[in-house]
Amino acid sequence: MRLRLILGDQLNHNHSWYTDGQDAVYVLMEMRQETDYACHHIQKIVAFFSAMRAFSQSLITRGHQVHYLTLNDPDNTQSLTENLEWLAKKYSASSIEYQQPDEYRLDQQLIKWSKKTSYDVVVASTEHFLTERNDLADFFKGKKMYLMESFYRMMRKKHNILMQPNGDPEGGTWNYDKENRGKLPAKANMPPVKFFQRNVSDLYEMIESSGVNTIGRINSSAFIWPVTREEGMEMLEWFCENALHNFGKYQDAMHTDGWSLYHSRLSFLINAKILSPLEVVKRTVEEWHQRKDEITLPQIEGFVRQIIGWREYMRGIYWAHMPEYAKKNELNHQRKLPDWFWTGETDMNCLKHAINQSLDYAYAHHIQRLMVTGNFALLAGIHPDEVDAWYLGIYIDAIEWVEITNTRGMSQFADGGIVGTKPYVSSANYIKKMSNYCDGCKFDPKKRHGEGACPFNSLYWHFYDRHRDKLANNPRIGMMYRTWDKMDPKERENILSWANGLIEDL
Picture 1 (cartoon, rainbow, N blue to C red):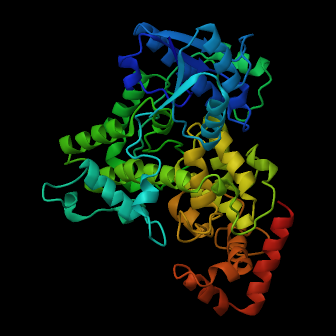
Picture 2: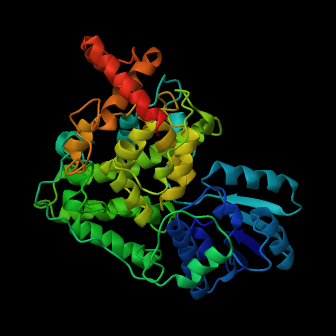
Picture 3: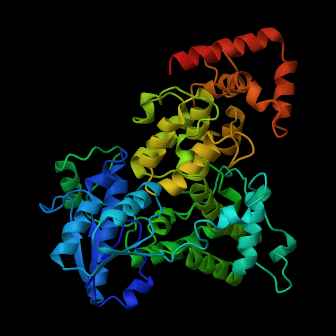
């Protein structure tokens, strides 16, 4: 009898394990080890546990033997490797098999344990990603820097996605990013949010009674997230039919009237491996082929780029640079995250909306994360450890391999330019351009300093001023320093003085 471990983000229904596993016991575990390594959103924990339980039942229905350890099981040691040891003994296992973890900490935990255990240990692929761990590092071997665009084009060619028979990209253009930056019109016809209804009260009460420390809010009698394979396919179909036609154009837009907008909200399902990236891409491309009169090329290309380009790229960077990546702090930021990041209690309307949405739904789309909460943290000089912990905990789709590269790299520039060639910072102007957040806000997006001035404006220039030694020679942002240098010296002094006051009062 073989013991086969299934981690909470390895819920791949189509894995080859399940075609030859009649002589195996499949093991899934709810553990304090996993609930406690970060302070997670309650909906995130509920989603993973619900998905794991549903997956367990699907294996049983398919005729497999499963041992499922709940969080409150008296036999649960709350340690992954300790549980494996006693379970292997219980079932007289001839070997223990596990799929490669996607998080470095779990990978190292299992590697170290496998060298000490008396059992034979076999490691398998998750059969999920379109690349292997080291493919990105190999692809850029000998190059001075990584470039996502060249990696993305290779992926398109390799998997024949949005390609013409002659080897050219559909439409003759590889990337339609410039057409993916539209602001929602005043009377946008946004699709109604796709909700699911599941009573998770028993699960919620178990988590609470176990003393797990969580953040965020939940309606445990009507949990809205899809967690099963069937619900995942239903969510994918909803996106194709109702939102794909406007995804590309409005993927960067933000609005107080909609927290989902035209986004697919498939990231949890894909990151937990309930859906595969390739099947998601193929289904959306199929929809585009069927409805080219309604779905333009920039809509589908923008979505494909997120899945087979950016997602795989982030994973490659993670495995190329861990564990050193988790300690990078290129700008030497040291400040603590403001308490209101955990409550949403701030007068800044954009941050109030983005944070409260995150607390309510364990979700925010990439521009809310990058250009609102992340932008503020970078401008204010928050330590990347603080920012990492918040993003890893609060979002339902956050697993370290994808979270840390986006946060410490793309958002906070703590990696010094491995992910992005420049810091992604902006004044209030960008937020006003891409959202309606500034409407009715007590802060004036046009004012740089003084009472009622939007904090983003003075913090923006303060950021560039204090990091001049590191950023002035960056060709992508030289214009900012020329603009700053041309300002009246008294104006610069007022901006910096005002920003210093804001930082001291975070």
